[in-house]
Amino acid sequence: MASQKSDSSHFIRNMMIVMGIVTALSGAAAWRLGSRATITPRTSDTTVADDLSGSAQDAVSITVASSGYTPGEITVPQGKKVRLNLVTNGTYGCIRSFVIPKLGISKTLPTSGTTTVEFTPTEKGTLAFQCSMGMFRGNIKVI
Image (cartoon, rainbow, N blue to C red; front, side):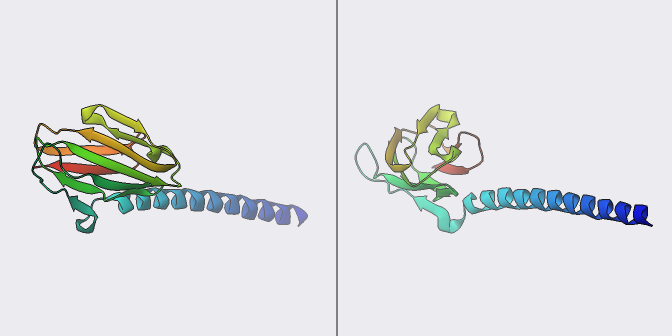
């Protein structure tokens, strides 16, 4: 009888461990998917830069938070200098490494402050920007 009770206790303990692991993995997966969802460009997360006369357009500000980019998508004109102001405020993690792979741009951002990135897009299309690990992403539409 004692052996049966001991086996039952071990089974329950093992099941609780398995349930804990499954719960932790499910939570991690939900957090990861949720993180991507918060930075997926939406209509409300889109900024269209003004096409001003002169050689450069007004600066476009992108807030860089530990949870993603806001706005997640901007639209800029082809052939005009683009000036991005990347604004951080208590930002931590890989998102502090801002990358535009297609243009070879890579900047390490301060925890708090503003960093300016300038470039002139020569082709129409979409330029992706992201953190160094590719976890957080956004788009620059060149029209």
